[in-house]
Every structure is written in C-alpha cells, then in structure tokens.
Image (cartoon, rainbow, N blue to C red; front, side, top):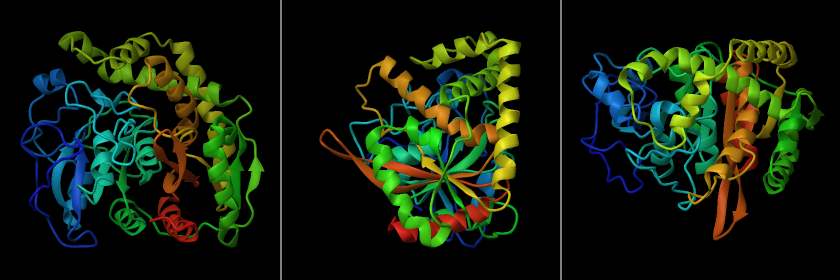
Length: 400
C-alpha cells in the first residue's frame, strides 16, 4: 500500500516503515499507523529522542499488538511521532517536529501519541495505534476530534513496547469512525462483548474541573442518552479533589518512570527538549513516602469505583477540561492545563478502568471551533461492552 504524502507531519522523519497484511479479517484494507514506541522488526524504535535511537539497536521482532492488527488484514503505512519517551501531554517534539492538529491547526495535537492522532485525523491512516499512561490517547483524541480508548490495565500486551510507567501504561487506538474503532476491539481485546445498561453516573468533580464552555456543551448531550442509559445521576466520588488525584498520580508515575529510565539517563546522558528534561528531573526527586501515599490513594479509588461499576454502571465526564491549548501557549499555561487534565485522566488511569472518548462536540475558540470529547468509563474488563455502548451513544448523538 503506497503511503500518502504527510501534510501534517504525523510520521517520523526518514523512510517510511511499511508492512503488508499478514492475514485477512475484519481489518481488510485498513491503513494502520503505529506510534514510535512499538517495535517493528528491523526498524529502530526511536521513542522520539535521538539519543534513545543512538543507544538502542533496531527492533528484532514486531510488537504483538501490531502483529495482531496485521493478521486481521491491516497494512502498516508508517510509524508516528511521539513526545520524547512518551513523557508529555501537549504533543511537542523539538527533534522530529510537532505534528499539526488537523482539526485546529493553531493548537497542539496532544500527546504523547500526537503523531498517531494527527495521522488519523488527517486521513493519512484509518486506524492509529498509540499508548496511554496519563492520557496520551484520550487527550489527543479529544483535541483532534477522534474516537480513542484506554483499555483496562493489562487487557492488551505491551510486549515489544517501550515502557514508561509499567503500572500505568496501556496501549490504545484512534479512529475517525465508530465502526472501525469498535471493530478494532474485536481484534485486540479479550472476553465477551456483554452489555452495559447503566445507570449513567455524572462524576461531579470532573465536571466542576472543566471550563464552562466545555462542561456546558457536553452536559447538554447527557440528556440525549436517557433512552439508552436512563437519566444521568450526579455522584461525588473524589472528596480529596482533582488536585490531590493529580499529585498522587504524579508520584506513582514519577517513581516508576525513574525506576524504568533513570539508569539509562545516568549512563547515556541524553539531551531532552524543553519540559521533558524538567519532568525527568522531577521524577528523580519523588520520595518513597510520596509514592506510597499515591499508591494508598489508588487503592482507595479502586475500592470506591470497582464495586460501583460492577453491575453495568457507566461514568460520564469531559475527557479534557478544555480544548487543545494554542501552540503559542506559555510554559506556565501548558502546565496549568496539564495539572487540570491529568487530575481527570488519572481517574481511569489509577483505577485501571477502560475509558472511551467520543468526538461529540466542539467549542468556540478565536478563529473558529475546536473539538472536545465526552468520556465513558466502565468497570474493569468491560472493554468490549464499553465499545458496544459507544456505538449506541455515537448513534444517539449523531457522532461520525
């Protein structure tokens, strides 16, 4: 399959890595793009950083998740850009270039699966594989007007993928249409489909955290889901507050990131771009007490959410508290968005729950409109049922 011209800078520089399908199945004819954290045999996995590429040989085998998609009929059309070592939420990369957001060109695409989101949103790929630790599939999906999923923690193998924070890392994928998005789950996800019949729970802390325009447009959509899930019921489940959840998540992530990459950083002395170096430096300073407090908070959150969702209830809230930040946003403005955003993405992240974001709305921004996503979260292991529900919700809301 001949690769298209990359008008938005979604793919990593250099010759495009391509592979023909390894079989036939539900993904016949689908063009697949893969984040440059997943191994493709014979190709360097650069993880967005030249020093990582310099100190690691080309991959000897292709990641199982990629193989499964190829066996189902997909064809690889290229590897996509990522934030360096996946440690960032905006999508910026000074070495490979920041991909353009096809739906809001003056704004960030979101990261760290920025290239995969840009490729899917620009029509350069039908299906794009990414990874999600703190929101790196969900947030670019929201920013770029795509369907995106963070599966149940551990539901899909991450073999052949650069680890970041192994206790939080998951694969995920993007698509512009609900049919392809849901069909991909048939290939990658275990278990039966099942059914989620609600109730629909409006998680109040996440709505209060969102900007007024985002909360307003998405809140109005919940009423239209009543025929499928009943009226939305307000619930408060995070009395500690979103900011506390952010700090707990950050401590766990920081300890795991440094345990995973600290030795390499000390030996290779890599050069990182703005922001990335600061985040690694902060990770190195996380204390054992801070990480232990974060893990205690995670256990408390799981104890609240898992029983609540066991019978088929679904949480609903804005995927991101705002539309994509402007490319001209200051470092301080970007950090404010990061804290408000990761405090919400940490809900499913810490609890290990499947979360789907749907491209159901836009908000007014200077010069036009920008996408925002609505998230639905189900109990652990209910991923395929959540995708089936996403089909119904997309139909009710008139999403693509």
